[in-house]
Length: 174
Ligand code: CO
Image 1 (cartoon, rainbow, N blue to C red):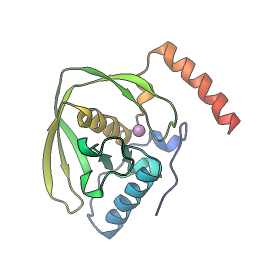
Image 2: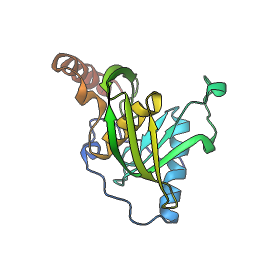
Image 3: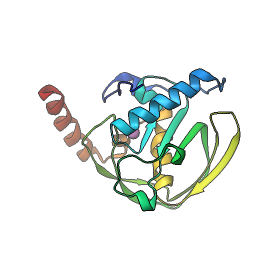
């Protein structure tokens, strides 16, 4: 089922999401719905709070090289991360980011280049993953959502002011 996306400046985006304790059917339904919603909106990542659920769960669709440019990445290729924690990070890199909760806005954001993340899958099995490319950026962006942060908070003061002004105008036009 496609769920409704929470759009900035909805206050729910500021919530600190809670640890998942039960790796049950309700969690699996949530993850399946998040996948459908992400595909429908052509996103590459989605945190549970973006569909209004304050649980520490996120999904990332890592583009496969041979499928690049195609809209629907296979579900097997979707990374599901429950209770993720960044256990190592270093370096820095600028990457253009966007967010389904702030549709149509893109900006270069600086983050760590390399991260190592510990997380659980939907069945409660623990994994460790590391990356220094697109996935590293996506994991940091999505984990920020679990802590009530959106990427525009990383903009400079001037860029943020400009964004807020344009965004207000856009919301009025809707
Ligand atoms: Co986002």
